[in-house]
Image (tube, helix red, strand yellow):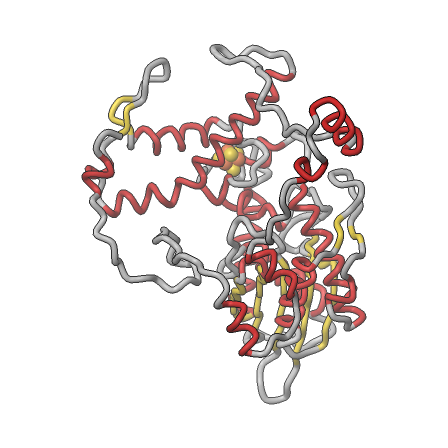
Length: 406
Ligand code: SF4
């Protein structure tokens, strides 16, 4: 399976739930983003360091993944080196024979199917069942990804079983540990299952892949299913799904008129939980529609009631600082020092970055910390899967007052 194969493991959350997406994506161009390509660069750094047993800091300043999206490539900076090191440290906690950056074949479940495992470790011990660990680095810091029941991780596990079953003694009790490391979100999760359970999952993959060949295959929109679908701006099922969810929160909804929100106090907390589950999907869908509309207008196509206008201009920038000083001095009698203004002290965050990876003694650390103040974070909302510890409600929120006049 190539990077953009139709039934790719990375798209399996979508095609296993919505087989119709295969025909909907047909012919739509593949696009990449600076974030995806930056992730590829981080994978390159990790692969070199794991293969050669080097610390990630050994790659600082080097450039990786020169690509179409960013022809100058991505420099391995402190943030990338720290994140990759966190990943390497976790990889090194697992025992076993190690294999890096392996393409694995999943043809028994998905025709012409291949996956790509960042790290495979296989640990054989006489007393215990074989333990197979498959580790995936996710460099992004946007969408949180969990390992439990993650179909992409499961498909990689199937591929490892397929390719290594003749080299190691697999049996029903062989343990598969499918691990996802998201260093920039400080999030590491693991899905443990036996080979028997993995093969049962494989049966579901096989059925879903077969259903994708059905020209009448059904749509099944949902926030996770649709988030990366290339057809999401034109898919009527997703449109209807989102509008239905949104309509339930409007008292009046009229495409040509003003939309009036329902008083949220009329929702039960169970209703609110369902709405929150979908807020992210609806927001992303709305943004994707906006981007699609801009593309249409840019192509000279009409969208009723909308037009193309120039957006906010960029910041003003001097073309030649020397010339600026000269002109201001001669024409307006304004001195050079006034033009440059007073130097400002760095913010605490930037100043702390200067200390970088220095190992500070406790007393030095304390004295630096005593130099700045920081207000506590305001209460925020997060899904239960978030690793932060819940805080006690402390503020008497006057909800009625806040909602009045909205
Ligand atoms: S947008 Fe969602 S419902 Fe529509 S085809 Fe894609 S995955 Fe299926």
